[in-house]
Every structure is written in structure tokens, then in C-alpha cells.
Amino acid sequence: MKKTILLTVVALLTLLLGACGKSDTNGAATASPASPEHPVDISVGYVDLPPYGDIVKLVQENLKTQGINLQLKAFTDVTIPNQALNNKEIDVNYYQSLAYLEQFNKSNNMDLVPLSTSFTSIFGAYSKKYKTIDELPEGAVITIPADPGNSGRSLALLESYGLIKLKDGTGIHGSKQDIVENKKNYKIVEVDQMLLSQAYNDSDLTAMQGTYALKANLIPAKDAIIKEKYEGDDFLVVLAARVDNQNDVNIQTVAKAFASDEVKKLLGEKYSDSFKWKLK
Image (cartoon, rainbow, N blue to C red):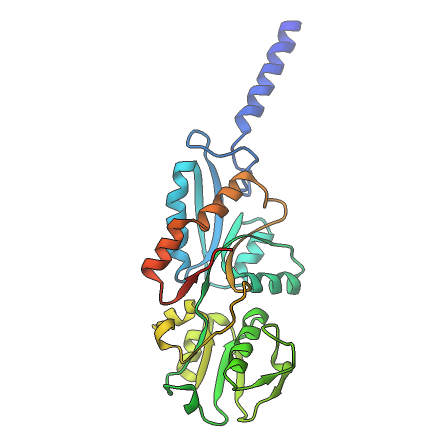
């Protein structure tokens, strides 16, 4: 009888130990550190635009030696990766600024958390019709991103060059309702950020991140007729996770990989005219 009980206990311990280092049904890693002998799967959602695609593939390759199989899931809509993360369809995502994440959490009653930051986009305004901002005529159509994080950023950009004036103290957190002066009657139109590169063809001036400038075959450092002067951390790109998995040892390893020197080198060699490394 004692021998039977002992064998049962040993069998149960073997099953428990064998479970360590594996992923659950949602792909979220357990608390055991991954290794080549005990690999884990971690899924990352990203928007399939530069530089995110290049970065996630580089990180995927670098994590293999640590036993982490980074599973890539590309999205074409900027709202879906956060919804997928919140619903536990993916483990982390990588595509948004800290300001965008904070606004998304607030608007959608979510509690997604930033794990690491690495770079920011060169943010500017572009015109297919005019070479300088002084040429912009009265009543010109100016398109800006519709999401609160980037629309406030755009309005602050326009104010910094004297195109409009915002309420005192508005900073980067304003909306069109905060405009108190628009002497030249500019028509400021908000569009989905995924449509900014298209809006560039139809507007007099378009404010957009480096990602969408590249999509429009523009080089931010060279082609933007005005560039952002703001130097804060609000627009650093973040790797985001959930509250329930943010402290997982393997998720933390992934976070470090996205803020690594290898990623910095990639951006410097391939995207120095569009993005700036600013590790926080």
C-alpha cells in the first residue's frame, strides 16, 4: 500500500515538473525561465509597417538562443492589437507610443501596461504642394491623426510654428476644441492614422509619424517642412503587456530584447532619417 502511494506521489511530481516552462492555451509564458531545453512560446502583435516588421523579426531571431519562440502576429488596424492583448489572444504588442497607449486605456477602460521603450518617430508635417510653411495659403486643408494622442501632438506642432494658438497650458494634450486662434482659417481635418499617407496626396499639409511618411515614400528628416520641437517621453514606442503577465520572467526577457543594442543598431543603419533612439 505504502509503495502504491509513493509511486502515485512520484508520478504527480513528475507531471508538475514537466509542466514547468510551457505555455498555457493563450501562449502566455509560465514563471519558469525559458531555455533551449525548455522553450516557451510568446506571441507579439504588431502593425505591419516600418520599422516594426524589421524589429520584431530581429528580436525573434535573437530570442531563439534563450529558448523563447516569438510568434509574430501582424495587424493592419491600429486598434486591434490592444484589443487582442486585452482579450489574451496575444501576450504582448509592439506598435504604439506611450501617449497612444494611455489614451487607448482611458477610452476603452483597459489597463494595459508599458514594459520597455526604445525609440520615437520623427514627427512632422508634409506638403505635396508647398516647399515651406510660409507658402501655406489661407483656408488651407491640414490633415492630422484622429486618435487623441497624436491629434494633440499635431496641434502642438502647428502651434509651435505659429499656425494656430491653443488655450494656455494645453501642450500636447489638446483637441480642436482647444484652438483659440486660427487667423488664416485653416481647415483642420482629423483622419484615421492608417490613412495619413493617402491624405497627404489630397491635403495642403499633413502631420504624421515617420511610419506613415515612409509609407508615402517620404523621408522625414528631409521632406518634412516643419518638425516637432517637443522633447518629452510621451511618444516613445512601447512594448505593452497586461497586468497579469507583465512580471512574467519570460515576458521581461522579451522586453529587454526590444530595448537592446541590436535594435538600436538596426534603426541607426536603416532608419536614422525617420526614427530617433531614445531608450528610457
